[in-house]
Length: 471
Image (cartoon, rainbow, N blue to C red):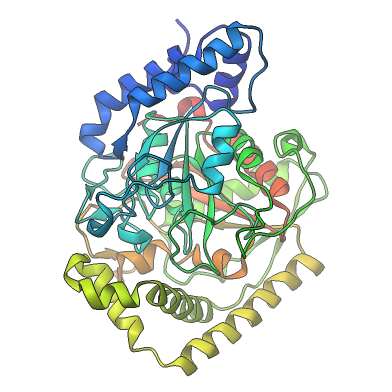
């Protein structure tokens, strides 16, 4: 008996659909059955459009049956879209009670590109309110559960996307990442999450958190699937002021590039919070994999964690406050307690501190860029310091007994990459002592998304193959 369709990756589904071995409708129905069986327990999807998806699947199937070519690399592939990103005609709530009945008239640019590539949108994934958190414990739309253990967080803010992909509700989902919101769910749920270079994927149509740090990208079962998705989602958007032009690149074709001679940096001194020993071991195993593939492992020094967390925290919360200031003044009671408190705190930060934080950010970005110019091609780091904590826990107890707020703990290792806007991929790296997933992340120079994906591809296959990675 073959692998069930809902356990099949995008690359394999694409091949089977193109060869007419299965139809888009057959693929869709396999995932619909999984959604109906599992979503009531995990709450990964907060809105679905299954009848519309069926009509689209039938149309895509008819095109192939009539001898037509696939529309693109995702012809007939079901996808879910984070509920922070607009979908035409489909409710998009931004994780807020204020937008519970909001139905956009236009697709966000990345969604439009996914549809143009043949993807079928099946629904919207839960998010932390306005993306302002790392747990996806949403007071308005309900908490999303980690499929590896009900009652534990999936990470956030793209927790619904991480949970949905890990549990086989969809083979591909979108997320957004401002302080780690793609990579944290990928690590805690055991899937691959890509934060592209800032400006490679349009932000138009995604509710902003802190636009200078915001990134939109994919979560999927494999690095190859993320490469396929990035090829569809990426592209210059003249209507997005943050969009940038990049040379054309086949991200999937570059996955098998040789790694011999690459210099990969380890930064053992960058530990803003203590790591669980299992996480340190995961990084060591990942380094061995790359060394055995011919890469040179070198030790590097990153900007101090206090500088990164201090400047990043101020930049992100102040930018976020500017988005919400007028709405918060009118509807403070409509916000969840945790998000409202963040925003009220940000309102009291002096302008001089925001300016200083931005200057510090630029210094940090220059220091990291210098590492890529002079010493390394990539940097390997842990993604999250611990396994997924229980839903409702405000604090995480770290090795040595230190108690750290859950948001600060889970984002401690990811915020750097958003500040410096570099491409970063989180890869599953086995399970910790509680049986929950762990992750490592690899980052590369500005625009070198393809290299990051190639390193992730090698790591993922060696550390925890997708075929073994099921809750």
